[in-house]
Image (cartoon, rainbow, N blue to C red):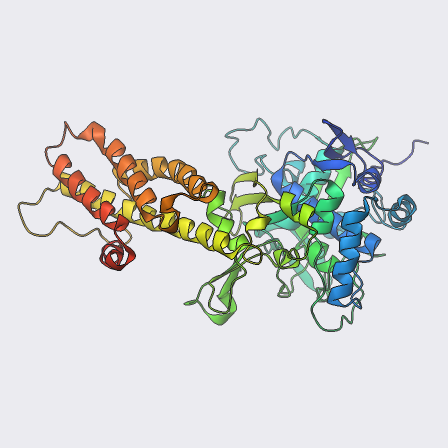
Length: 529
């Protein structure tokens, strides 16, 4: 009799890594045992990379004792510093004991990893393997860039199915899903996963173990009355009927807030998933919780319950524009709050602090079903610029970013105004004011597309070289704005008689932004849409 399909992620090589100058794939056990020798994870899907870092952080917290809520803040930092400076890896026997006691098989019939075997009986039908895999069209969606269809779905190798399983739990869609009946609840609608449409910031060290230790954060709340466990440590899958257990630190916070239930259907030998169930995990509201790797923006005009929200991923927004949000500690008047994990990095050993970089993982999505694009980036070493260590550098970075944003707003406004004047030239008096909420003109779109790459170069020049103008970055970005506006308008100068005078007026207005701060207020008022 053939053995049932199995795919234990702790043993199968399902996690790509950079190690010893080359790419290779390891099982979860080896990733943890070799973490002090691994340079970095190498997952090709940024949201899976971000999700796996949270999973590994929760496991590392238990293996190192950094999940001990009884440690004082001083004791917690001393323990982490010792781990960072010891040069030792995690104890192999501790890793083996942990994996042996956990449900880590993707296809275990009774307790599959991050899945619910009850779905086979509780769902009306399967959802299709294409529904699991991000990037494939499913149902009636058109196949624009993918050859996959629901008529002849291609199986997914089990390692890739594991990656997409992680993405579903952290970034899954809201809205229509496969109908599930559990107790009194019968529904075909799910709510959005906890990280949907967000941008994660992960401190990165010289090795994977150093990265995971930099991801740790001490407990600062009250007593925890519920056991703090990861889903694979529970004897049963999450209860779909009763309210979910409270969000505890650090494991449930990092791994136990999924809004989706999944069940993979394997092929005969467990090498691939051929089908899947994807549905809701709970109909109860999510408990409030703040992920420690997200920037929190405060919207002062919003309702109290909607005032704080994670910064959204935006593929059109350059990542250097978020740099000051990481470096500034903030105060009660700040409208942005850096990821909570960065508040624990101030007492790092000097060599660790000097090489600390930040891995950024974003998934540009809407709040419900549309997925646009995912992306990742790695900053240069930057933590020595943090406000706690170099206040002038942090303030200079913030001032440069604010100047770049201000000139971009002025560029959009004056390019639109110049375009309007060219299309409907005035014979005298004030030029027509841009209409509120009006769509950007061709000149504005082309100028801004040119502006942001050049603004980024100007930003790094100002940050890396303490030039004379570093104390006032507005002239630098004003010159950048006028240069790109001239380039955007140049093809139309010969075709439109009014283009030249309109351009000249726009350039004068932009140059006003290079004036001393006391003379900028008028330009700022003029730039309001």
